[in-house]
Image 1 (cartoon, rainbow, N blue to C red):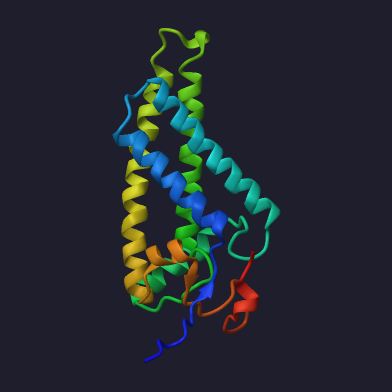
Image 2 (cartoon, rainbow, N blue to C red; image 1 turned 60 degrees about the vertical axis):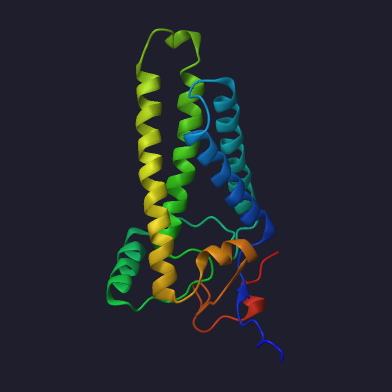
Length: 193
């Protein structure tokens, strides 16, 4: 018996998925398995910042489609939150507005953590605690954002009736319409290699 054809559309390219999982692994290892302030901790933090920088460059080069960098507007975030509360969520190609906002927040935090960790090592601030305090505060904010991100993925998966974790593994999602489009998406419209 043949399986039904996969009607999901490719929305996440290999570089996007690889970057996502590399960044997730680096952040988890640095948060929970390294000695804060040690050499390994620093190098993993710099590697995480490099992954974010590469993703930003990739998004600038591939401006169109789900890979592009388009911060969501506050009004689109509010509209999506209202849609989630009503249970009427459209399955977007790429991130929904709240997912995109969280993506930019997580990237910013990783970059700020790398910067604050680097600054804390400068001789100029020897004996000053404020760079380390800022680094610790950013770490707590990052942890809160990670938990919020995971809860958002679960909620969106349930509301959209699709496995978004699987989509970040194989790159394919059910898509209702193309961002900025006027109707249903076709594979040719959203596939971006």
